[in-house]
Length: 68
Image (cartoon, rainbow, N blue to C red; front, side, top):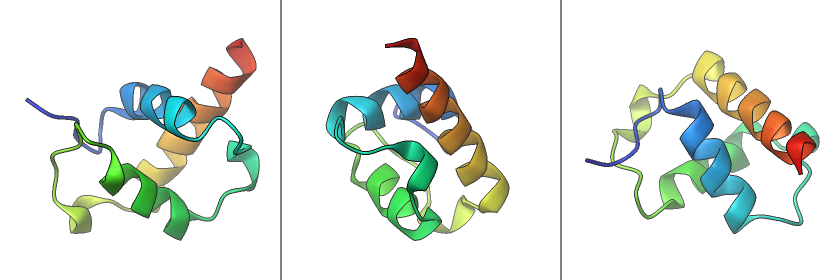
């Protein structure tokens, strides 16, 4: 079973591993949307995302980066 839009923490971990040089504080949601869709384990419909879900993923990614 793959990742869904609601799996913000797991998506954030995957994004931080795939894009270690990106500061998630300064990303555009269009880029974030595309990067989530590019995650190998991601298995959800592209149109199911929204600003609220993308914001949750961004916040989880920021927290992930701050922990390192």
